Length: 188
Image (tube, rainbow, N blue to C red):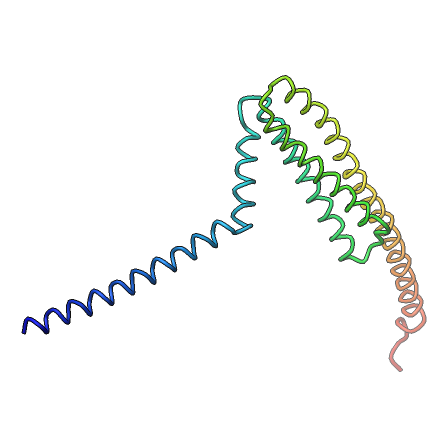
């Protein structure tokens, strides 16, 4: 009887050990995936930038705010280009120009992050002021690109409206002529 109890205890301990090892390996794999996840890394980075953008210290707040503005401007430009392309509007060489603006924004983003890590406050302030001027110029270029897309879409919309108006007037004239010719006849 005692031997059966020892055997059951040994089997139970083996099963529990196997379950514990399996759970440990599964937990390790999940933690590893989470740590390597780019989505989580991006979300964490955005959260830190957003928090730093509202920091009370101007030298902490300014680089984060500029990085956020660059990202919003880039996102708006890509959305405007995608919308214009989806609607079949001419975009010309603007996607290449947007790609060049993105490359400049990525470089500026890198420099702003380096300026944000600068421990010397005087150098950090000088560097951030220089980079702010470049960020504003880049933001203006991106806005000019979106403005160009908007003006192109306005001219196309105006042309389409004029064509629709002409077509409608032609149809109204044809219907009036038909009514005058056939619509007023009495049934024979």
